[in-house]
Image 1 (cartoon, rainbow, N blue to C red):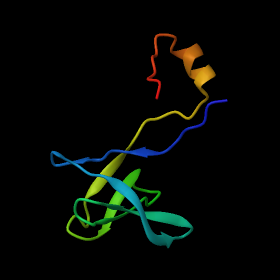
Image 2: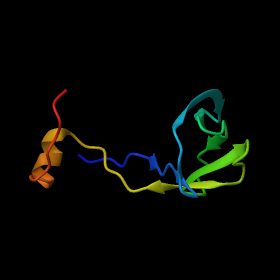
Image 3: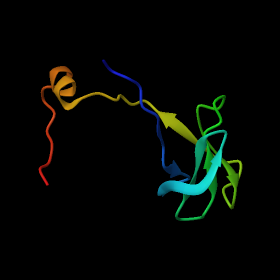
Image 4: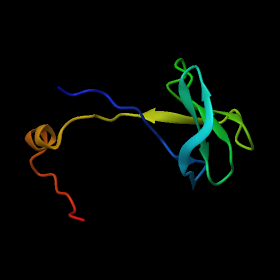
Length: 87
């Protein structure tokens, strides 16, 4: 069984942001922040991404990216050319 996972772009105006959970939640969802500017980000369902809700990037948008949640076994079946790194 393959489920969709939610992944967001971290690129905004040529800058790569580092997203992390903040100490805040809203409607049972973690509010994220970026370590570079401290902007708070929230995934409003109707936007299909993250919206800056407070901070220097307020009203900016980080779109949702297509992704797949699956097991390694299923992934290898679908993509046999895949490689991985050992720790």
